[in-house]
Length: 248
Figure 1 (cartoon, rainbow, N blue to C red):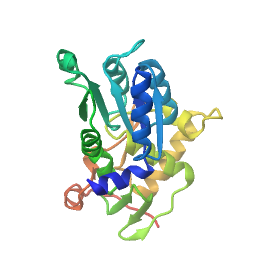
Figure 2 (figure 1 turned 90 degrees about the vertical axis):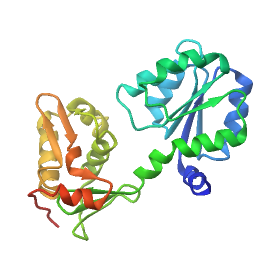
Figure 3 (figure 1 turned 60 degrees about the horizontal axis):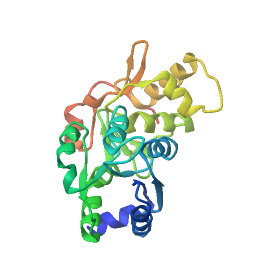
Figure 4 (figure 1 turned 180 degrees about the vertical axis):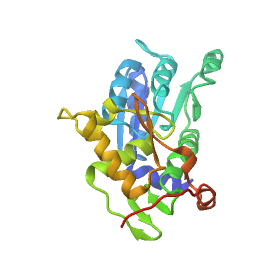
């Protein structure tokens, strides 16, 4: 658990709770573990912060005004199955938890929250992020270190352009989803208007460097990572090896 707490030092958390005293007291505790703590007093405010800040962890009370914790989680899970979510409940909320079965909730905290319970639940839920800090192995001898953003082909460093790195990270972060051309454009060029050909040319350059199997086109929609071609263990990636080339 000590190693997990160390990882939190450069992570952010969003804490949504309508009770002012509990929100402030818990936020103070969280600030000792996380680099940045965002707070929200209802679900609507929490979702706005989530969209703007993209926190690494979300802790939300179930019962809140304007939008409860379950509706908040459901809204997030429509497009994000990566960010860990912890639900804060009371004993009377047990029946409500049935509705959380399909929301990929990472942990539950029961009020009143004890410090040991809080830290243990956070560390357990953050195992997903801890795993993501390792290596990804692509099927044509390319490895990508998510933590350091270094990429190699057969041990030789590859150089990607800034936009190529941004797009690769975006696709990896949503590797179980199709990322639309509109989302790619707004993420990579938030202040500019770009045409589809600019995105297509960017994809072509990346395929030339990383092989043509990694990024799949979804007709009329966008692109996604070929999850059959990516693994977090080298042996699986070797089994998925396909014809492809990488340029240095």
